[in-house]
Image (tube, rainbow, N blue to C red; front, side):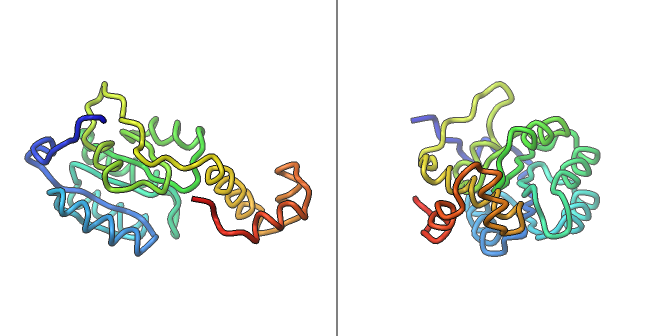
Length: 185
């Protein structure tokens, strides 16, 4: 097992900005990060994230990519302008190589796909620049990854089953059966 990071690794400035529009996830993560020794400020919007990044730029940030009022990368850019040494992790439920590259190019330290737990996020925030992050302890199963991809394409097609089936190159009835089932673990 990879070595665990401890609170002494955080450093003297423990300020952390959390930006996510999933209210329950945001509150759970806020409590978990406070238990790990961070001074947390949380918001659910791009506007709120930019305001905090401008007024009180934190040493650490965890920012969701897609927010109700825009793109989390705007918050990353603002924070990078105000505090170039900030450690920033971008979270998203819609993991794609293109968005990961864009996030890192504008200043994100790391990029994690949801669902990410507080341990994965803490490890990413506290990793040394040349360290490779440890592999996740509970990675998604192949069935879950497939299901997440289908759900993402379905949402991008405005929940149109026929269009989603065409883009995924699968029969419409097969897709309907998959969508009717619960998500795999």
